[in-house]
Amino acid sequence: MIILTGFGPYGRRSFNLSAKIVEKLDLSNLNLPIKKKVFPVIWDLSLNSLNKLLTQGYSDLKLVIHLGIHEGKKFIIEKYGWNFVFGKDMNGKFKFGLIRYKSPLLLKTTLNINKLYSNLHLKDKKQITFSNYPGIYLCNYIYYWSLLLSEKKYLIVFIHIPYKVELNKGIEVIDKLIRTIVSIHPDMN
Image 1 (cartoon, rainbow, N blue to C red):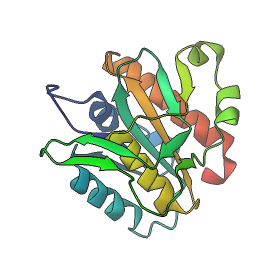
Image 2: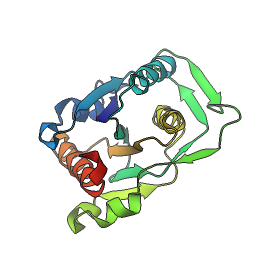
Image 3: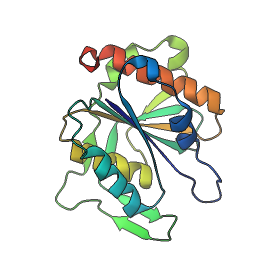
Image 4: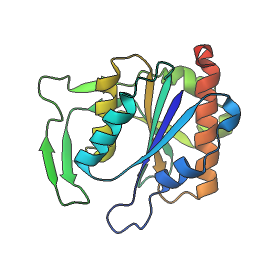
């Protein structure tokens, strides 16, 4: 099973491209069950939704892919979730500080990103980069919690999408990334 998530609208943006990609992306021919979820940009509600999603007892859960948007021009695969958060959500709730006390400062993705990158086509590599810092807002919050809750039982990765990319281009790149991840992990099928 694959879980694919995005985020709802926030700030002055009437829609969030990550949610549109989650809704429109068709992965039915992967022959893997897909569970899709769009989280609200609200601290507590998004964490509650994540907890429910990850504790459903999916014995066949293999991969969790979180999508969010960013201001840059390339798709960014995030290497780490950081145990720090800062910002105000759509309900006006402000958070600042550690996500969870007595937990590691950072957690690394369980996905072999070097193997992923080496298996991408050259033209796809030009659109993708990697980052050690996913920010300190809700994207990082959800990523960190996912990595913490998973206890390394399945693969987890966070991908930031350029917010100005066209929807079809975003779908195309995310589709290629997911298919490449599945192809390099034979235990997924």
